[in-house]
Image (cartoon, rainbow, N blue to C red; front, side):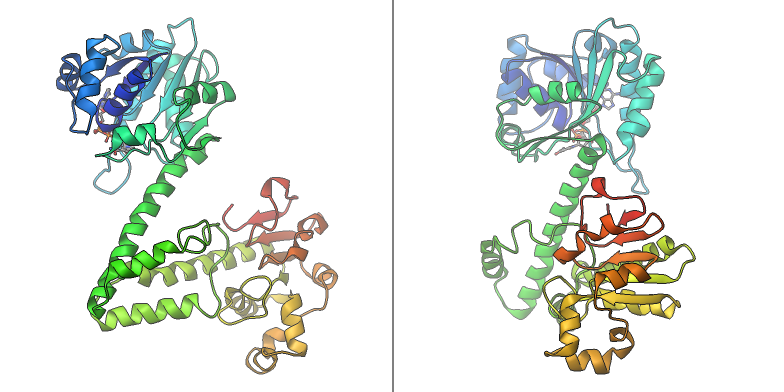
Length: 439
Ligand SMILES: NC(=O)c1ccc[n+]([C@@H]2O[C@H](COP(=O)([O-])OP(=O)(O)OC[C@H]3O[C@@H](n4cnc5c(N)ncnc54)[C@H](O)[C@@H]3O)[C@@H](O)[C@H]2O)c1
């Protein structure tokens, strides 16, 4: 394929060199003539392992060239990969000026082309940028709508500086968000045969994936460093601790606990977080990440409550399906649903609650005393069946993932609303009136 690559920085230079190695012809474009001259002379514009050799041979073969002439590069290629910088402004917002300029340049050429062109954004951009900036800018410059002679993709880059060439050939995954299937197939073809999953998703999903990844990586570093600092204050070897932590691939290094849903609770996580944060403070170790995990949880409970109140829209009758902190237990200790229930009661809502396990516990079992003595104002609201709950609630809240709740969305009358805190069903199949807490 003939490819133009806009921006010859870390991402653009590595992408250009590797695509040439994979048999494509690449024209690099940069508005910095020094970078263009370096590539033209077969030299790498950045320091990166193995890159100088690849660029030297690619340029010598004539398969890699560079120019400051954006228009010519678009005319001479069938696909443009945009790798220009998207730096932070002083206030932390994303500076999209370079991206906008390049889209204007590419769009102006698309206006004159009598063949199809694909524009692939590899720069890191926030969700919505493709639809709110890239597509409108291309449309304005091309004077024709998306799909009329051109298509777009978002193709986030996962390379790490220092091992960028290795990472290009061994990506953790290849992700393409696209305006349509033809565009997605064309962008994916650039990476055909590379290892790792090849994932095609809507544009906004691929934009968000990159931020999710990087925020997660940053959180991991901060988390490990806070744990390490507490260990040091205690005279414990942090690496010995983390070595054990890493060997748990069921709960720690795994997909566990990573599904968006409702707040955590129960007898362990809140208590242990509080204890370790207190202990760190006691040792003069500042642990803002650990400290703010509970804060984040409270913010999420607040969001849930606001959502229920908004769904009620002035009505008062609410049915809560699921009361314990997760399905399959009657444990109510620090269940975030207790917070939700107490706050709604405090605001004068008329509540009924259904939870099979808690109902059983009310009759017998270890939690009986707690239910009858500590939270009688809540346990008196328990009903025996989902039918009773549905008869009462103008809004139904799904509070935990008990299997028997899966039918509830389908049983809503046209008037009833539902707030789902656990994703009890696929939202695509949800009836009118359904809303999820973070989907
Ligand atoms: N560096 C990384 O490790 C990395 C990894 C993944 C994603 N990203 C993302 O990729 C994008 C590029 O990052 P980078 O580190 O390669 O940036 P960089 O600053 O090294 O390179 C950007 C290049 O774009 C050029 N440029 C600016 N305006 C231009 C224009 N109008 N026409 C042509 N070229 C123009 C600049 O001269 C520069 O050479 C960013 O969005 C970044 O967040 C970077």
